[in-house]
Length: 199
Image (cartoon, rainbow, N blue to C red; front, side, top):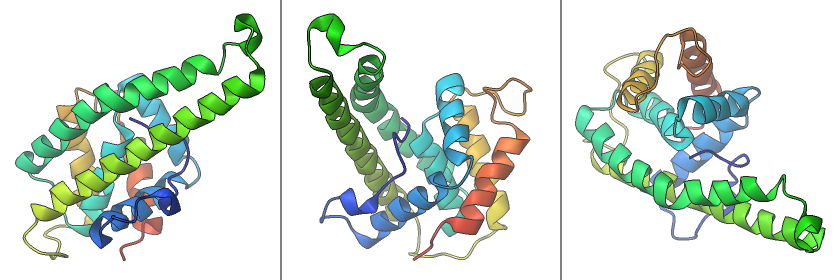
């Protein structure tokens, strides 16, 4: 699952809890930084990465430390199902509409674009729900609201990303563009450490 645009927390539900809001603000801040959207979408399209999971790994590494195998298993079990059954079909429909001219179907172009934008908004809402759910799952499994790091946040972020990539079947440290390579790890970690809010 990938963000169709930078996350806008103002579009989220009033029922959001503070801890879940933290992850949304963090993801929005990191994703909006120069080069991060392109990096995430490349990893999604060429490496089949879940962008929401990539950003969640960064958030947890900065705020809480290293993910355990059990935490990652729970997070991925939810995310993989959510992505496959809901967000991926929405994304496919949105992408299909863009290159197919409405005139080929005797449809008004404005109607087609309005529909595509509504699908895009629903896709984005689904990503918000995924982030909110992941925050709840991972915070509940932590022993404290803001535990001390056992390792440097940079090390935790990179460790979480590598663990996720390995579990997701992505190449790690391979030269191909679809791999989560050292430069990708550094870029994501730097973005997480410099811009992601912790409030």
